[in-house]
Amino acid sequence: MTDTETQFLQTYDPAEYERPSVAVDLVLMSVVDGAPAVLLIRRTEQPAKDKWALPGGFVDIDESLDAAAHRVLREKARMDDAYVEQLYTFGEVDRDPRMRIISVAYFALLPADRYAAALKNSSVDLTLARVAVAWPGETGGPAAAIGGDGLLPLAFDHAEMLGLAMLRLRGKFDYSPVGFALLPQRFTLRQLQDVHEAILGVQLNKPAFRRRMLDKGWIEATGERETGASFRPAELYRLKPLIQASERT
Amino acid sequence: MTDTETQFLQTYDPAEYERPSVAVDLVLMSVVDGAPAVLLIRRTEQPAKDKWALPGGFVDIDESLDAAAHRVLREKARMDDAYVEQLYTFGEVDRDPRMRIISVAYFALLPADRYAAALKNSSVDLTLARVAVAWPGETGGPAAAIGGDGLLPLAFDHAEMLGLAMLRLRGKFDYSPVGFALLPQRFTLRQLQDVHEAILGVQLNKPAFRRRMLDKGWIEATGERETGASFRPAELYRLKPLIQASERT
DNA sequence: TGACTTATATGCATTTTGCATCTATCTAAT
DNA sequence: ATTAGATAGATGCAAAATGCATATAAGTCA
Image (cartoon, rainbow over all chains, first blue to last red; front, side):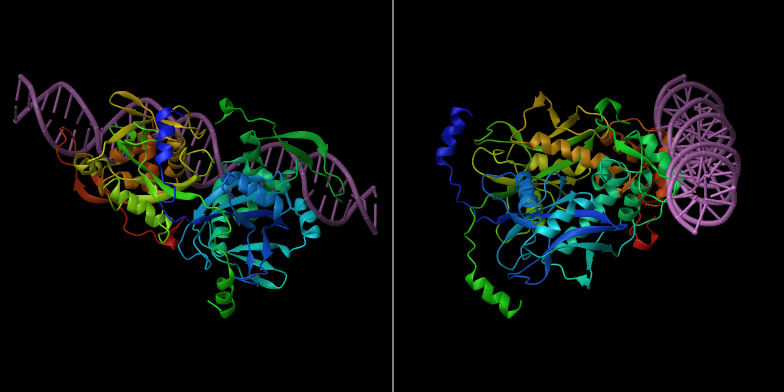
């Protein structure tokens, strides 16, 4: 920092504006039984008591947004090492009845089996709810969460966040390798197709899908095969370790 | 609001967390002479004095993020009615030396001729700088601004914002009608192609481009023709007034 | 051994894309 | 009036991508 910048800081009044609170909310998604799923927490306090909410928390004053998202992932969802990406920032004045809270929504992706531990050991009421979107293709709009007992009412503007996460995911799925975050390290082409069909909400043609995926050059065969199936086992693939910028198409 | 929610609010302490300031910054873009351009303001105060910055401002406590973006567009850039879309939220702790400022970046698009009035009548040092990206295709990274005197140094993390705006624009250009915001209401197919080439940074094939644009069904011929050209005048097209959800492909 | 089930491969028609080239229509110069 | 020059707009065709039916391969299980 230059001398003049230091001098400036001594005369600057940081209390000039009344400030909003800033929070992060996590749309922590997976694919379970061929359907998109999201992690929700039952609220035990007002406001929106007994409604279901995305895991979230306030951003500390000395913590970056990304760091806050990872902290919430760790503390509220009891997970780490997910694929995490910033989604959108929600800033309507009345979105929270308590006070002005601006929320930076992130979405995170993990394979379904990684949720098991968190769901079991949690002291709070966690659930992995099925996600239903009422709109086709790339239209957009809010999304609904379906639990064992039917529709789960969502707190605040979290239905919008969920819908936007689905939309973003659908948009990125075909041209970006983001979908592999929903699969284990070794996966079959059928599993990959199931994940795509779940997120996109359409049936895909098998030979065409297989051709496209292999042509993209993102994955490679391991030579190993699936076990436990009562029919011909599929080959296991893995994501290629590095995608060099120079190889991009 | 329910009674229990009201009761809750009376006992809630909103001063629990130290809060960051929240600002919006606008990446206000256009295409000038076949190249992407961005509106910049020369900073006259510390910090980053004499560097060039995106127009921005703090978000009022009773103002939504979108409203703040439109206010900045009006007050700082002296414009209204632009296409405005939220881009990304920048929240590194040290991104501003004064204090913790979280900035919600927006990008806005306007045809080049709409900048003329703002540039002339402004009391502050505004410029419409050419944007240069050092990365090909969809790689991403910061972008540079080039003025009449060469490279313009950008304040804070505004080079990242500019780069991200270019990346988002490139990604959306082909599947969304966002590009029409950079053109006047009536435009020729050649103008449309020029805008696409400027943003994407590649040369496009004329018949293929024309076919794709007409097939998308976004535009319609007006029957009118260009005037002033010293050669065969091109037909003027316009964006179709409404895109019904049911017509979406 | 053969029925069953799913993986993987192949062949082919259809659609999309890239590209060269041809024709149309304007202005301006002669 | 005619022609050169320039760009708009159309057309034809090869190459590539896609959708889809079908054939073959490789396991389990009765």
